[in-house]
Image 1 (cartoon, rainbow, N blue to C red):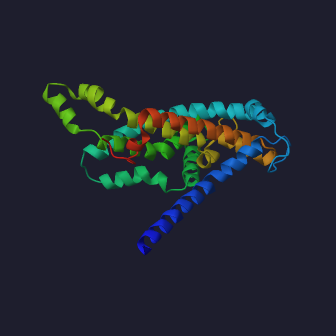
Image 2: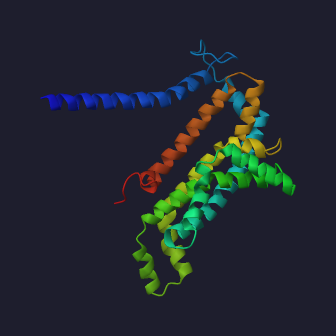
Image 3: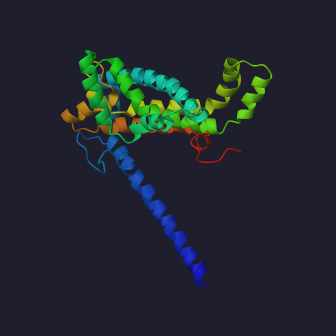
Length: 272
C-alpha cells in the first residue's frame, strides 16, 4: 500500500517537474511572441493593442536585409566546408588508429568548451597580423571552427550505425575504394551528412559572439546587425525577428526529423 502510494507520488512529482522545466523553457518565447505583436513603439507586456507593423519593419529594415544576405552566404560556405572537413575527420577518428588520435579529437571538439568570444578574438588578432581582418574569408573560417564539432558528432554516430561488412562485401566483389565510398558508404551516411549540414547551418546562421569580433560593416551577419539595432532602438522589431527565427528553425528541425530521423542520427534511439 505504502509502496504504491509512494510510486504515485513520485510519478506525479516527476510529471510536475518536467512541466515546470518545459514552462521555464517555453515561457520566454511565449512572452517574446506576444511582445512582437505589440502596437506600441515600446516593449510592454501584455500588449494593449495588437499589430504586425514590427514584422513589416523587420523584413524591410536595410541593415537586416544586408545582414540576412551576408548570413546566408557565410552559412552556405561554412556549413559546406565544415561538412567536407568534418566527414573526413569523423571517418579517420572512427576507422583508423594512429598516434595522438585522442589529442586530435580533443582539439577538434574544443570549440564546444572554449568560449566563442575567445575564438573570435584570437582569429581577429591572427587575421589582423595577416592583413585580412574582417573579410568574408575570416568570417567563414570562424564559423567553420565553431560548427565543426557538431558535424563530426553527427557523421561519427552515423558511422557507428553502418555495418562495415557491406563495404567489405563490395570490396571483395572487386569494387575499388572510390566506388565503395560513392555507392555504399556515402548513401548509408546520408542521414548523418544532411543532419550535420543542417545543424551546422542553423548554428552558423545564429552565431553572434565570435562573429562580433571578425565582422565589419560590410560583412556583418544578421545577429550582429540585430545587436547594432538594439543599441539604437527599443521597439519590438527584434522581438518580431526572434519570432521569425523560432518559426524557421522549428520548421527546419521538424522537416529534418520527419525525413531523417534525428533520434537515430544523434544516438537518442537505437537503430533497428
